[in-house]
Image (cartoon, rainbow, N blue to C red; front, top):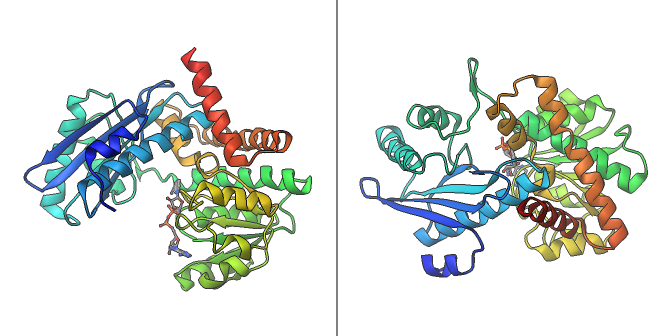
Length: 352
Ligand code: NAD
């Protein structure tokens, strides 16, 4: 894909971007500020090698728009933002720290207009390091080390699955329901445990078969080959590994009634949401169901540290999805369209 900065920005509806070329490392820094209707832009900092710097800018602008939708769907008082460090090669040691220090200085010049956090390619250690150079990073770093968003994201997915079960089967109970968890990592492991504790049957799939076996053993479930995920009979398919697994090739194969997982960008394109809808498979929009970790970190940033309160707030994702599924049902639209409408309504209400 070839594009340039101008083309990217002409097709973007966000508020501003800050672009800096980092001469010592050859990296490009992009900070995309999409929408501050609900509050100052907040979103992760991604570090990646791109073929062309404009692809890094494109990623930053798209991801920032995604953050606007994620915060708005939860009506959380943050706006949509994202930063990307488009590096010429993966960096370690002094080279990486030098880049991070200069990125921290850039954030300091923005005086908190944007607040960042961990994302693909950055680590809890990077967040701790950045926190030493700028107050504008959101990584929750307590006395026992960095906080882990995975269990909060998993809780949001778990209550989201309950909501979807209620919409499809008339009962939210997990008892006896099979949930295929694709990717048993930071989110998939705690999610599998919650499903098993609620009486659900865990089917664990991972490219790392040993991990899948461990999780299946612990949860009293069984392993599914990573290649057989889409053809395996289950009630719920929970994509918790990579994006774009719901696409024209996989949708016809699915035998589940629900797609509800943590992965970002689960649909290859919006049309795949229509395809699921036509097949009678209920899709829990990814940016709604996977917002638990972001919400918990946002709350911790606001000073909420009581675990019960954090869990209670993350569990409101269940009600948000109830409303989205109900709107989808009554209006005859896909859940994706219903959640997009919800986002637009919430932003409009706050703009007024
Ligand atoms: P992770 O890296 O800890 O775990 C992902 C697991 O998926 C790994 O065990 C990996 O081996 C496995 N995997 C990778 N490709 C696979 C494939 N093709 N088939 C089966 N298994 C595969 O990641 P995570 O933090 O658990 O996040 C999972 C997904 O959820 C990602 O898409 C992430 O962007 C998204 N997400 C995570 C969070 C969070 O709080 N961690 C929040 C929002 C969204």
